[in-house]
Image (cartoon, rainbow, N blue to C red; front, side):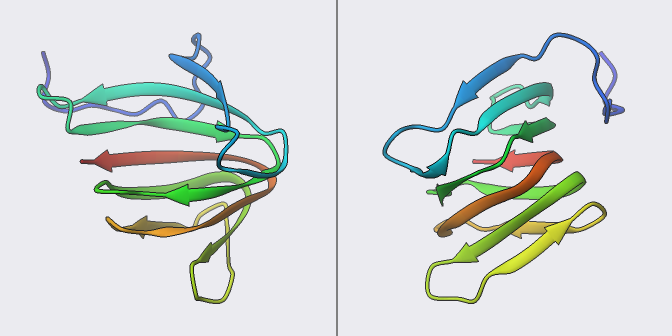
Length: 118
C-alpha cells in the first residue's frame, strides 16, 4: 500500500455512495449527493474524496468534524449562523471547523474535493 495517494478529480468509476439530503436538514429543492470516497485513514477518522451535489439548500452542521473543501466546479453560497453569506466557486477553498452551523446553498451543481477529519 502506498502512502502517496493521487485523487481522481473526475472519477468515471461507480460512486461509493448516492444519497439525498436528510428531510430534517432540507430547506429548498431536492438535491442529489454523489460521493467518490478515495482514501481513508486506518482508523477511519480521516476521509478524502470527491463529492458532488445538484442545486438545493440545506442546513450544514459539522458537529465535531473538521472539513477542508476545494471547489472543482459549480457555485455554492455558505451562510454561517449569524454571519453574511459567502460565495465560493471553482478554484476556491475553505474550511468548516468543528461546531460550524449554517446554510449550504448549491446554486450550480458543485463538485469538490473533501478532506474530513473527525
